[in-house]
Image (cartoon, rainbow, N blue to C red; front, top):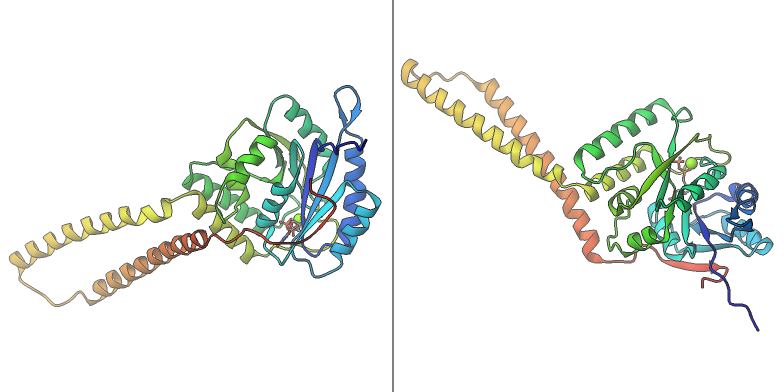
Amino acid sequence: MPVPPVAPRLSVIVPVKDEEEAIAPFVARVTAVLDALREPGNVPLGWEILFIDDGSHDATLAAIHAAHRADPRIRALSLSRNFGKEAALSAGLDHARGDAVIPIDVDMQDPPEVIGAMLDHWRAGFEVVYGVRRDRQTDSLPKRITAEFYYRAHNWLSSDKIPEHAGDFRLLDRKVVEVIRAMPERNRFMKGLFAWSGFRQTAVEYDRAERAVGTTKFNYWKLWTLAIDGITSASTVPLRVWSYLGAMVALFALLYAGYVVIRTVLLGADVAGYPSMMVATLFLGGVQLLSLGILGEYVGRILVEVKHRPIYVIRMRIGEDD
Ligand code: UDP
Ligand code: MG
């Protein structure tokens, strides 16, 4: 009688884009860590590694194929093109089968040795165990400053606070995964979705290493776009602030108008005032364009949401799904 496949306890999901040299060392190190994990009662822990090939143009898929042939617990989805890391993570969450799911980067910046500690917290009853970077020494100064500024801005503007210096490396209980999967939005800013979902959360600290092989897939422009996605999906404060600013300017204008009338009545009219008029006109013009631009950011996102296209498209799979 064929034994029905047992769902693994733990799924490790790994988005990859053009990482051909990173796959083999990743698999070797992570497999060793996972094989050493034990369930209570000293039973080996069932696990799977699910790669999401996010439209790689190099031999990434071939490397994953080789890994799968050597160990069928390693599976993969290959997306039809590059959909971005957030979409790739969504694909991973949709197809992971474990009771706990851990997204991790392939470049070994997130040390897999922390997984054991995450599982301990999970068994103690936490549904989310996120990794927090002890310091950001391995980041360049501009990256550290912009990251710091971003977390401040996000948490100031939004009521769903994201934990500072926590990346996507975290353990998610099946309950949390299902909540995130049920969220209908196309804009998958994962940190925001994790924060919104709630549940009992705790942190484990770790040191983030330098990238082991390959180069970063994020430049400042991509990070800026991600930051705007994050804030616009979590907060409407940038839309509302203009009403208050407008009200303040209007009030000021009213008071100033009163002053001008009284002054004209008492002292007569003079035609000076060209510079102040220019300044006021240019300032208000700038503010109006800025607020229109911010309005546009939100309208553009509404357009993306109402089109209701799939978040990602799967081109092929390696290894069975269910
Ligand atoms: N990645 C991806 N799709 C992309 C960009 C990146 O799946 O469009 C993957 C990448 O292969 C890596 C992870 O996301 O496994 C993190 O990327 P990276 O290390 O370049 O980011 P950084 O650590 O520099 O922020
Ligand atoms: Mg990295």
